[in-house]
Image (cartoon, rainbow, N blue to C red; front, side, top):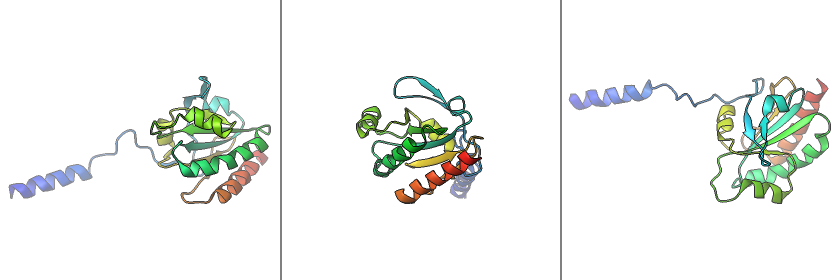
Length: 171
């Protein structure tokens, strides 16, 4: 009887424990992008809302160890070069690193020229980015207009990011 009571109490304690305060529901299309401030690879501070005011933005959460990031990021670089002078900002937020490869060296060696930001784990949590690469396109009004679904090919991501940028710029 005593063991049954202890087991039942333990189960109920587990079931009714609220989520921790660090849990954030994933941001989805139509939701408002979270504001954040992170350090860029050059040491400067970037405050998202201020830096991207009246601009469309693309946010990618990536990591040096992520093979999917390695194949997608060159495609994003091509899109960035096409739209960088048309009111579009790109942010590559480094997350969930394992400490093996220096993210700045990796980014520079690959020749990426969009804004690279460091130590974005907390921001990744705010957005609900549980894996990499997580890609968001955000309109001028800070509403998310595209979120990369898990398992989507680089070609489809490239097409969707370009389409959503064009649509958001037209608004």
